[in-house]
Length: 243
Image (cartoon, rainbow, N blue to C red):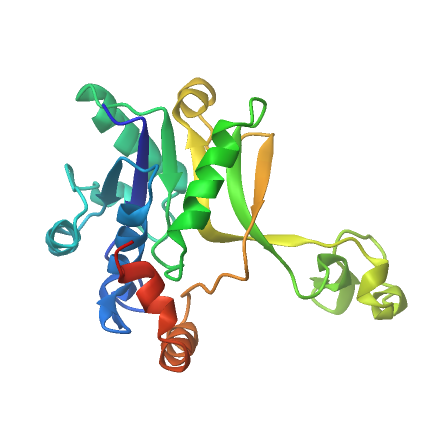
């Protein structure tokens, strides 16, 4: 029974970038990038794709992943949560006596991924006795304290402040604390914690800092990543060339 299982969600109903999980990116499908990185990992023992599509399932299998079940339609919509597909996968694994200790949540929409960093994240979490989970983050180019909300639909208000006085937001970024954004590179989850709490991450989430990770949410994102591959083809060779 595998102790560490990578779980890659790949639903078929994307609207912002239609069929983005199986779009060609640098000669490889978007989903294929994440599967390849997981297969190259030295710590991940099994790679499972959770999808609602038989077409996606067949493609995932051809890339070397396992697809032992299809995800139900009712937890595969635009507003379906990460907890729903993870809980569904864990229930299947438990019913088949294959429940692991750790889930490595890998989002295919962050395709450029170094397997060595994935292994470092896994080791970091396994060696952290108090953490409820691990999330990858990268530093924001501007502190979130310099960003705004629209207050009462008529004027700007600084985030994390009740004040609509904005002059302080003009201060140098060095004045403010660094802030970080989750980037989908790798999350490491404790199955025991999920089953006990009904939560994925909990209240002691250890950070794992990565380089800035490019995600695909729009057609512009897709075009930008394709351009990056044209400029630097070593991005692909780092993922797909065997050690």
